[in-house]
Image (cartoon, rainbow over all chains, first blue to last red; front, side, top):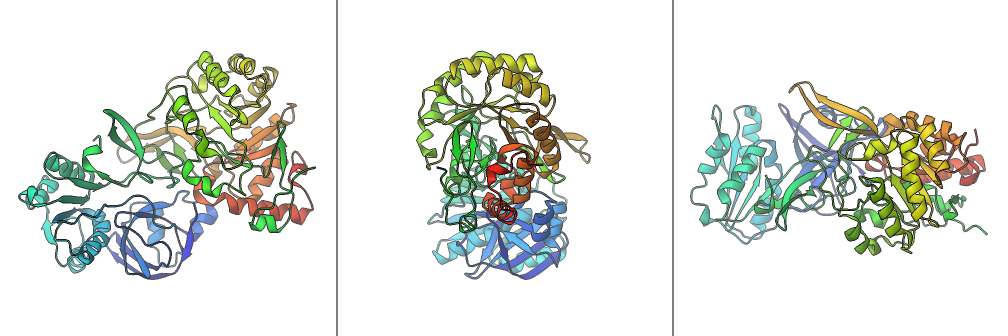
Length: 250
Length: 303
C-alpha cells in the first residue's frame, strides 16, 4: 500500500471526535471513498501494525479532511498533535450520485462521508434533505460543530431514546418523495434504512468493516451480499464501501 | 548467461544482480507475494518488484470464506481468519490470463482430501501458464483439511507423494506450518517436493475482554512472527537438500537479507506489503547487496 506523507494543516478535538485537515493534491476523493491513515512513527515500529480506514469527510481542492472517533491505539495516535501523518490516495467505490430529490441520513461519527456528498449534490443542483442523529453521548462542542457544518440538516437529538435509528427515520416521512436515500451511520441505522426502503426507494449504504490491505488482496473486509440467489462475501475496500441496500445480505 | 534486473526503480539504477534460481526457474528478484496477500488489483505494481506472481490459494470448488470479522490488530502484526475465499479452480483457470504480466506464475492450492489435492495438481500439470505449484498444507482457518495435512510426516508424505505423482515436471513447492517443521520438511523432501515454503501463519487467538468473547481465532502474521519463521528457515535449510522459500513478517530490505542469510533461496512478502510497498523493501535489499558487494544468490545460507 502506497502511503504519502502529508502536511497536517489543522486538528480539532470535540471530546473523542477528531477532525484532521491535510494538504492533498493527489486524486480527487469521491463521496463515500475512504483513505488508509497511520502515523509515521507507527510505520517505523509497526505498532500498531495496520493502517486505519477513514472516510473522506471533506475536500476543497487543496485540503482533504478526516473525521473520526478515538476508539483505540491507532486512532489515538492519529489524534495526537505531533504525529506525522501518512495517507493513501482515496480508495474504494463511493456513492453513485442521483439527480434527486434525495435524502441523506447519518448518525454518530459516520456522518463523516455525508459532508462531501452534500457538497457534490449542491454543486449539481440536486434537491436534498439531510437528517442527522445527535446522540446523547455527543459532546456539546461536537453537536455545535455538526450544526455549523451541515447548516441545512435536520438534527435529531436521540438522548434517552430506546431506538434512535427509528426516531431519525420517522422524521423522513413519506420515503417515496425521494429518488435515493443515502445513509452512513451505526450498524442499527444502516439496517433500519435497508428495511424501510426495501421495495420503495433505492438506498445506498456506506458500510464499514475492519481492513488490512485495503487494496483487495487479503479479503479481510468481508461484506455479505446476495449474488445470483446465494449469500457470499465481497470486499468493502474495492467493491465498496458503499453498496446498494438491496444487495446486502444482513 | 544470467539476465540483469534492470527495471526503472532505484534497485535497477544500482545495477545489482537480484536474480535467483528456484527449482530451475530464474527469478528476476527473490521476492514473491505470500499466498493470500496479492490480488489482480495489485498486478500493476508487480513488475520490477516480484520475481514471480503467486495469487490467492485456489481450492477445487468455490469457497465463500469465513464470516466477518476476519482480521484483527496484534502486537507488530495481525491475526486473520479469511477461510480461503476463492472462486474455485475452474473459475480461477478461466481468468488466469489476467495474471500474465510477464512473470512466472506460481499457483497455491489447497483441498480437503489427498485425492482432491492430487486432482488439482493434475489439472495444473499440463497448463503452460503455470510455472510452479505450491501446496498449502497448513492454512489454519478452514474447517476441513488444513492443519491435518501438516499433522506429521506420514500425512505430509502421503499428500506430497500423491501430488508429485501427477505433477512429474512442474516444480512442486510445499508450504508448511511451524509446528514440526523439520520432520515435516524432511518428509516432504523425501516424498518429492522441489522446494519448501516456510512458514504459514501461527495459530492465534484474539480475545475481547470488554465483551468477554473470542473476537477472532485465526493465524498470526507480520513482523511478530519473523523470528519464528527465521528459525524454521535456518533449521530446515541445514538439513534438506532442496531450496527453502522464507515467509513470515518480511517488510524491509534487511528482512529479506536475514531470510536469505538464514538459508532461504527466495522470500515471500505477505502482511508486510499491507504496511509498506514491497518496492521499498526491494530497493533497500539492493542497497544492502551493493554495500556488501554481493549478488542476491550469493546470500543464501551465508552465515
